[in-house]
Amino acid sequence: MRVLVTGGAGFIGSHFTDRLLEEGHQVLVMDNLLTGNFSNIAQHQGNRKFEYIHHNVSNHIHLIGDIDWVIHFASPASPIDYLNLPIETLKVNSLGTHNTLGLALAKKSKYLLASTSEVYGDPLLHPQPETYWGNVNPIGPRGVYDEAKRFAEALTMAYHKKHALDTRIVRIFNCYGPRLRPDDGRVVSSFIKQALTGQALTVYGEGKQTRSFQFVSDLVDGIRKLMEVEYHEPVNIGNPEERTVLELASLITELTGSPGEIKFEALPVDDPQRRLPDITRAKTLLGWSPKVDLRSGLTQTIEWYKSELSSGGEKTAIASHA
Image 1 (tube, rainbow, N blue to C red):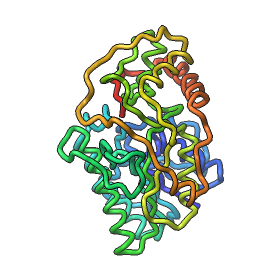
Image 2: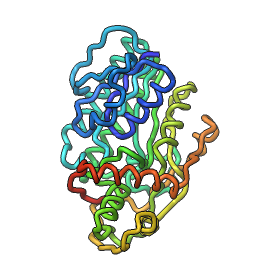
Image 3: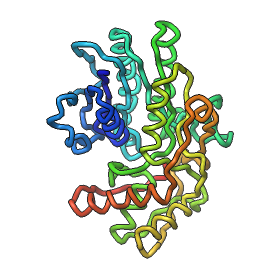
Image 4: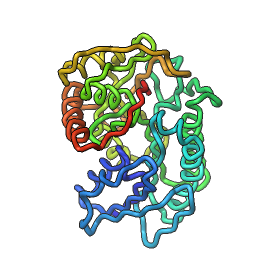
């Protein structure tokens, strides 16, 4: 196949690119490196089945030749990014989604939208099934991402219903692993960086809020399976094991051998108190469930961070429990 991966130099997009190339497909990565990093895909230079296109998908996309799949990952995805880039976040999930859907329609491609658990907001239903409509503050600080993704889902479904485009929507829950930027600002990256650099771990509120954490290889497996079934409603891909932020902090300090000091700060506005996927649909439809346990995944991630930090690849991190 010939596959376009937007945001393919980002954390998840680069891992999905790896998988497609391993399977022998031709991959076009389109990324403007706003939050991605070319180093994530640099290992594929020289591979005749790989092509990098520096382009902002919020602008018109013109590609020559057939495209079998359009995989739309492009978007800032961490609070530190979408709070600093609110307009860009809204544009890539509206204009960018429109442009990629239009391309898929013109090329008669399968289309996948990478959506997010953030469409559920600060959920009042727990765990969250795909049928839950969410509890989102549209004008709060997180609204630029939450509502952008909700719009992207609506637009994707409109193209499916109006034009019979063969679409998929994956709702991604918290994901971690190698290539998650040290300055990404999410809780796993922040805690690991703080632990490895001898800082106290920053916990917001009392640290009793819960999250679920899936290793990136499990997510890639889930998305890959989703592309092989004809199903157009959203599908949650995440780990159904619930952990408090304090539990995560304790495990990371144990694995890094850090002193384990914690500093508590005020809870950010609209920070979700509980976030946990109902993955019944993924289990039934795809035969998928996560395989990598948190301890094993964090061990692999910490080793990558040690290498990244020692090479000077980090920036100043701002913690968040997103």
